[in-house]
Image 1 (cartoon, one colour):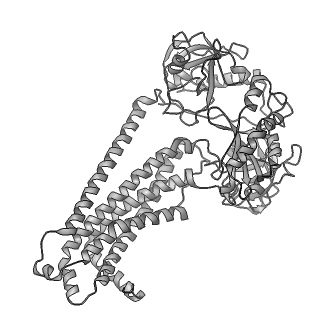
Image 2: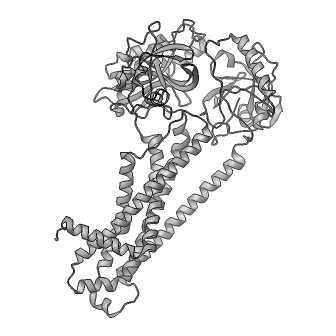
Image 3: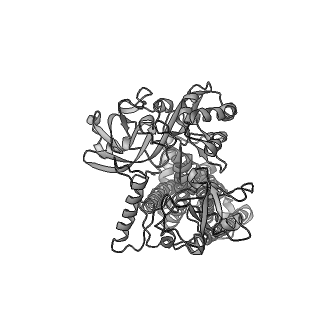
Length: 635
């Protein structure tokens, strides 16, 4: 078998291939653009999929992490009481435990304040995760005390943006929800937090950021999401089996006495669930986009196959035109393997150009998609970058290797297989034998794949038209969504809060151009649906219906243009002392009361005291305010 050749010969083959490609600019550009579109589409979609679904946390050995929580009957994982963390730390199957909450807070820097993403972490979080400081130190369990000195750690991006990376930030004071915290360190750059898309600007010990619950007036009780690190050789199923035997006891001991009755019974009866924790938590992106990205990746693979078939057909046609050239070279003594190597060099150069174009197109496409999403979602602290890192480059290289196999080897092999005598006798002719068969297979495959792509595109376009025209059944035209963030030390009792909110609604409604205003506990099409158990009070034994349940004020239906089919809307004269009222969707009313007459009937949803007896005052048309794929909606 001949040697591949010296580097000098390889460079001569590349130089010869460049000269040949320059003589056919139309062919070269067509082939490069075909591959750029095919590989670029795959790279762009995979980059987004990697960012949202596949990329692990920027911590030490993320595959060893698991998420621990209580499994609700709606399939969601619920956080655990903070006291359970201490019990989990004693578990011999675990190397470490990290309890945390993630959310927004009003952060004060100097004289200015901004709403920023924050983490509240147990003192052993950084040690469990293996996160190191960029400067200073990170807090430990000794710092995580309710009455201890208040310390905070800055996120790397926040430190760069707000403090220009100044190391003298250590020792300065920053305010979180009006409470001063002393900055003791900055996390390393690779740590982007535990909640997808929202790297924490500031993190503080979780015991110092507890919220007062009515069931625990001491203010020391808190709920925590839990990530834990398994010991080597321990599996998730092994840990879950162990926790099942102890979980009810752990929850019962972890809940303060203020949790009583049905609420406590429901909480302690939830079984434990252990799920992979390598990718951290996500409250929005994966649930909304994972399935769509997987579908797009499948379609983009088909596009790549069509592009490869197209380039292979171009190379076969071009090889037929070069039969006399190849025949002359063979006649004067050129070895077939040398000609084959030169033809592969041409394919490699075309592929290199296509790969460069693909990376440029994918970068442009990713920026365009993320910019459009950030604009629609309207969050300044949203951090989705989808960088072209080694995983994306490895995927692009794999796609390029597939492309070489599909379009490069067969045409090069058949072009170099020339019968010198017949080729020199005629400068033209028709494809016969294996060449004709190869072209027919490639053309048939290209047409078939193109038809599949067109059918997929038609289905996607039809789904989009349906969603835009019919499925949502509400109107967002001229609707502005704004989030309220309480000012520091602005706490009010229930009556004071109601008065303040009523005055705020009235003031906003008096702004010129405002037609109507309402409060809601969720953001339409942004919040993930959280399904509650809904049951009839007159027949509590009947099957429980699960549907999202949210809190809104009067005017919400009018703003969203949701028709009221029966009964009445909420009234702004209703107070905390008024009977609890609710409005249900048409489909929920039909499932709860199949014989009709839902208005005036009593239902219960969840286990909170304020929702145990709710009288239905209205029925509205179905509207998919949170999940476009469901028709079960209740207020």
